[in-house]
Image (cartoon, rainbow, N blue to C red; front, side):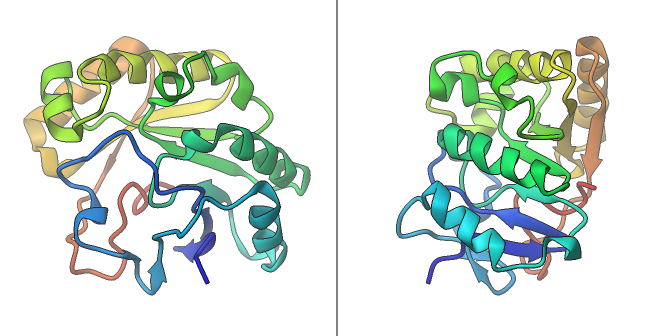
Length: 212
């Protein structure tokens, strides 16, 4: 049975897809099956009904928030994300989206306005401070175009009134982190610096630890 929802550090996570436009050099998918005891490789993308059924099997009151973050880029499943997110908000839950910020390239349209009413918080992975090094790190199918698209998407989400931040992991080095702080300030967004957690530790998960 595939893992559609899983818990981690007091939050409930939704694993919508394994599809991703990137092959990040640091990605946990390179040599891990999932997070802790949760195998996040899917045999198929779960339908909206499958996701809602999985959510109905847990007590949502046990979790401080629900997060779209699994073993792929959630915005590949934009329609499911919007429907499920709206349902969760109707249940009174705080909903967060962890994303690489390439959703507008993936869907070939502006999507930030569509996320209003589906998510409360969006965390966009900044990863690097310039397009060239960013592409060398994330290896997006969209090339260096992905960097500016990611920043544009993040700014647009903030303009829609969604609580939006950029994030980096401190493993990139203090100099890079300082540059990312300057870039985040330039585009008017807060930056969250997450502590690097080695792959051998149980709580290791790409894009999840340290994001409160």
